[in-house]
Length: 364
Image (cartoon, rainbow, N blue to C red; front, side, top):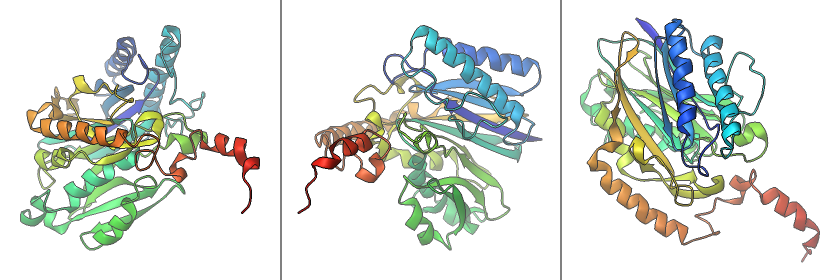
């Protein structure tokens, strides 16, 4: 059975500050998706939040970027924005950059990760959602899972995975992409994805048969809006098992709380903290950046109840380390490397400050 898995997210309002999605917004999403399921527009759905981002998971038989599916998501975000404004939630409609839906939600603000595939005998997938960071946050863990044998021993001992994977990388500044076949072009791949603010992993396929393995959202809100309005808070889909990395190999990279861009005002570097759904409420300096992971089995298009993968106590040390890193980074205050470099601050208040003071500079 060929299905499409669509994960679409948006920040349409939070309480209090940038911390959590209001229950009424989640109920709106569930109600609308329940209608869509009854009308057989979708097969199944799941709704959750990571911080102040509303996450919609849908399965259906339509193609990727289908106007009907994107229209369902758009209606939910539109209704949710209206309720958020009624409740006077903070940042109501923050990710909704355009008011008229034109058939595709991409480029309108919300983040989208989708893939179509033939459902296997068993179809486990992991859906990641992040808050207070940008799409480049997936670069390190996806590289480790699909190209680093120290993380994924299957790359050595699995005959199919031993043939490697191909990474599609997007240049978000110039809106173009390139593919790297690994392990042959691994070093070339690293030369680009080591700059996660510009080059982000968009998708991954298996070299053995071109099987799709990964899809991510790559929306950069500031590049669409021309100014800083909030972080991108990306989502990511990773298929697991049967000649693909197993679930343990997929979540293992997050045991290291590596540094990502985002955090408070989208202008700071901080540790990426793996948390359970109940702990995805970033409050300290509006952070630190959070990531959640839900493990699903897809059965004839239906989503079995997910496992909250980062609820595992084995990630406690990563959370402890993330808090220690947060202490260290915060002590830098407005100085780099905690505050982002000036080139990455172009969409915050820096241009206005520079303009205000431009005539006070004296040539030496």
